[in-house]
Length: 62
Image 1: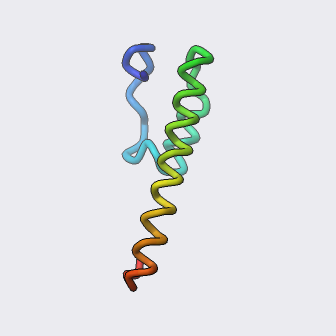
Image 2: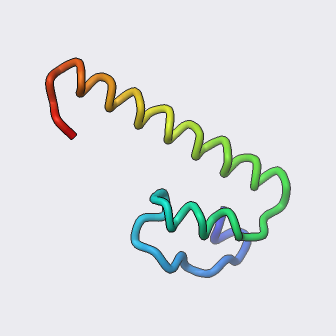
């Protein structure tokens, strides 16, 4: 989506970390694509929490 909307390359190494998400939040996208990015970030957070839960149940330290 970023490429399709001719946005510049993110100035961060981790697009999904705090700084990357801040950068994403300030990018101008069409409303539907902004909603898609927001939904995908929610999914990423959900799966991250699920993974942490499974790893905690298995005795892994993060």
